[in-house]
Length: 487
Image 1 (cartoon, helix red, strand yellow):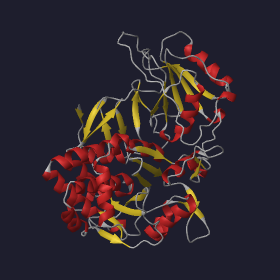
Image 2 (tube, helix red, strand yellow):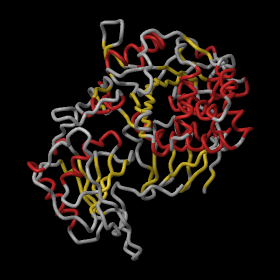
Image 3 (spheres, one colour):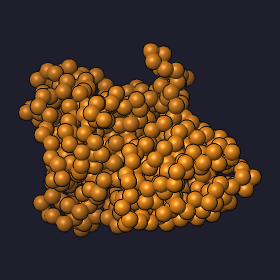
Image 4 (cartoon, helix red, strand yellow):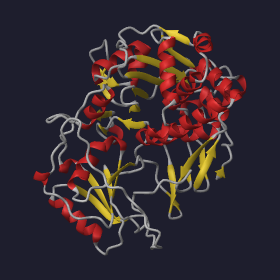
């Protein structure tokens, strides 16, 4: 495991993002650690959390799913004097006067019947109709102009997402939370940096980030990787890329909070104190609600939480960039899921065509010309094959479909098109494609389009378990389907 030095200089406050990651980690940490407390203690500590009135929230129903809107704000009201150089340009932070803002939002979805959870990111530049106005603008302006009530109303009316509760946290608590659990390990497949956020990872591997280093990683919008001895250009996905990297951190942070918070009374007390000091919730959020939510988190495997992002595409480009717009019907699929609606019904939002799926084909079996042959097979079935090449090794007995988390529907369509099936693996690092098909030795061709149908309600596609041979094989360069580092 590698440790890296903390950035040597403070970053001007205007570069610090108001990241939702902070809010999510503080809120989840609060929920998790309170699950290990007695109800009377919970009631006392919960009474200390700051609460605000928010009209129009969807009513909670016993046994039904719950959606919590989590946001991060740029409030600097609680910054200790010794930390102000990192967050403000003036000692009194008067340079940061004005309304609080939020850059991104997430919906935490808990389904008690399925015993599952999901987190849906809403990009800050998504253009929607702002509630109580007649104009369309980027969704983060709803909070700037009307704070929590207008933001909640905008999400419910413009996106159709049900919101039961609300929680907000400023970013000051992020560093304290990470340090309280002893840092978080993040896998870096290559050296990485961000000259704007002061991220500096000189060596590949599993790197334990402390609070300062973790914040540099979480706020990185100009992420670069060392590729063949040269630094790559900035991540072209900018804020979307940052959201994807934050998903990696969220899962690992939740897992660390669960393991450290419930097993160490000193860590438990620190996390409770941080959560209470940094979280603001709606007044309708009762002690019973938070207790039930806490119990669900306590028994939930953080690695099983689905991390999703509303799919968007740019409006304009360059100097004429006008924000993001939803990509349908895939966006509606995720919205339906967050609302507890089954989108697999015939004619529903899952009706995706092969031509809608951008595919990268990777030879994982070592057979000469396999990637080109499979690419031809898929093109014959109307798939949009972007490129092909070699996988990270030739030891794949079964095929694997790596897919961007929001492209699960497209991955399932490709899975049903393969005669031999394939294992589905979420991969938020994919760039330029929706799915990467790693072709194994079991490949037996692709079915014609007429044979591929949308599954009926309740159906789930079959999968093929992948096994890896121990026989040594040459390892050619990867083209985009990396095996996760074993952190």
